[in-house]
Length: 278
Image (cartoon, rainbow, N blue to C red; front, side, top):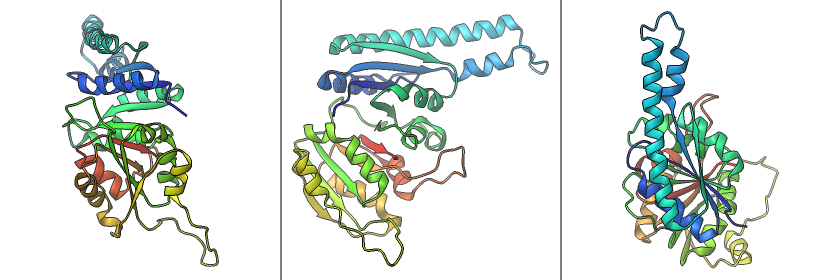
């Protein structure tokens, strides 16, 4: 198992660290790297054409759309330079619409998506980090404070026996195999079963050993309300530069519910986080 196709979100502004991190990953795995750029304003402008309540002339709207595409062209030039310097095969996609929708669609034929945490607190609810994490795609989220393309030397895996945590572990195996040190933060299972069932134990250490990964288990006892804080604290104590965990929540197409640990980590993360939903 490896990542042979990696997608990286290229937001407006300076996204070089995010792209450099993705390019380094692509180089390590011999993967093809695709940059994706979203144009939400263009989608809005196109819908405004012909709207009687919009006072802007069509020529003005066309000029604004052209300006947005010029920004995309500048971002592509920067992306090409980073990918070319890394020596990885790469291409470029541009979509008109909200970034989360564009990334989720483009990620359908990718093995891993790399996105940013977001610059504002409001980005958490509607930005790519949450939306992609709660889709069916594994995602590597880069914190806004991260300044290096290097990561994944020391990894903390947050494990509670859930489907989401299991998916995150299995889909992060290529990264775990490259790590120098892996710590398992083991907490009680959050899965609920009928009282008459006695489920078999899940031995994550043994599973990883069969995958060629030696990991150090660390028992943890904390309430659900403090799970996110505990994950980040243990990551700091072990000097980890990557966290692997399940993503909990429902997408915006349903009643919006984001798991407490997921929300806390996404709000306060200072190292890259690998998330998967199911």
